[in-house]
Length: 113
Image: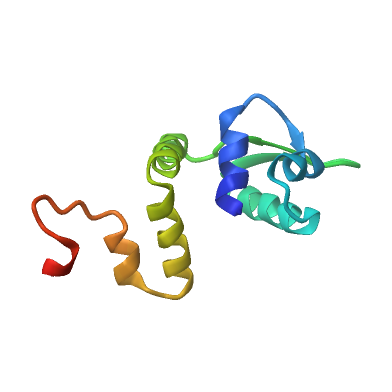
């Protein structure tokens, strides 16, 4: 879900969105959406405007982060299931599954080792 929040904001970086706007677009729980937005703010991947109704937009603080997110968006679009497997495997603590999600094995079948 946090990845979807990031990618939504990334698609239109000039647009400021409230948590309710993001939630409406992603159809999640508003509390979870707020949590994801605050976590992304804390990492410096999105910019936050405080006020009565905080607003957010994609504006990474660190050089190079925007390029990484572009690549991530491409992976998410082109290899959705591999990215999903990666996310859930990493939550289970499997570093091997995490690395394997990005391995490209030419001429080898998956069960060849």
